[in-house]
Length: 106
Figure 1 (cartoon, rainbow, N blue to C red):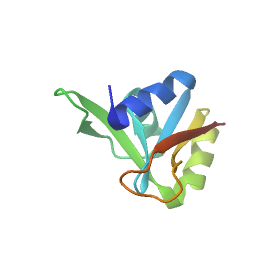
Figure 2 (cartoon, one colour):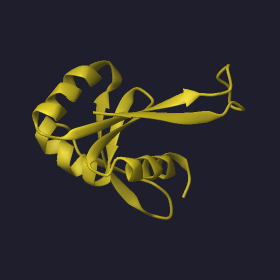
Figure 3 (cartoon, rainbow, N blue to C red):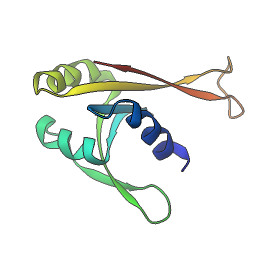
Figure 4 (cartoon, helix red, strand yellow):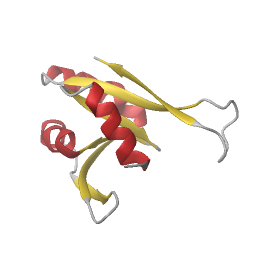
């Protein structure tokens, strides 16, 4: 398993009891069961995306600039949260640069 879905599932194993908000472009995305739980609680649209081999995965997104307000709502609703950032470990961002993941849980 590779790509975003592979990265997400590896992180989710480390935070099984938390909603994992995965930075993906201008949004923090929730996938699968996390998206299904968070969407109604936060008033988010539930969508889906092809993640390879014909598999569609549920998604819900939070704009990156609104993370703090949504994080407060997540915690107030009784959920735990893990925030995942993609970080450049090669110095200058480029297509050849390596990306790593950093996660913090609340």
